[in-house]
Each structure stands twice: as C-alpha cells, then as structure tokens.
Length: 82
Image (cartoon, rainbow, N blue to C red; front, side, top):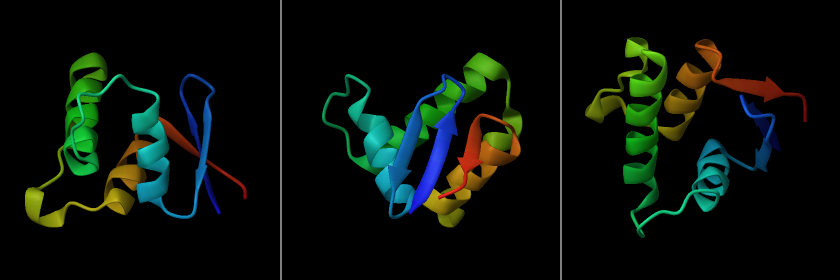
C-alpha cells in the first residue's frame, strides 16, 4: 500500500501510483479526460503555480511512478509510511 500526503494535508492511498492519481482525479471536477491527460494537466498547473520547471516529463519517459517521484522530490507530495 502506498500513501502520499498532499500539500493540503490530504492523504491518498493506493496499491500503485496510478491508483493514487485516480484518487486525486476524483477530487477535481474533470471533464472526463483520461488519467494520463489529467496527470499531465495537473503537472502543468503545478508548474504555473509554483514555478517548478523541473517537473517537465518527457512523453517517452512518462510513468505514474516517475511523476510521483518528481512531485516528492520537489516537496509537493510527501511519501508516508504504509
């Protein structure tokens, strides 16, 4: 079980990072976009809000694990013990 704490204090749990991003997407009023598109748009939003240019993910390298690791690295996600 993976656990990620957001900057807002919200705790998300899932069996994989994909599960965690699914739970994150549930909290947004999305227009039915697929999860991968949602995550890319979420990253873009964070870059604009916080100026985190090191969040750029190459299309060929994209994985939910890589996105989560980058968000943890820059302090926007906090990994929690299971």
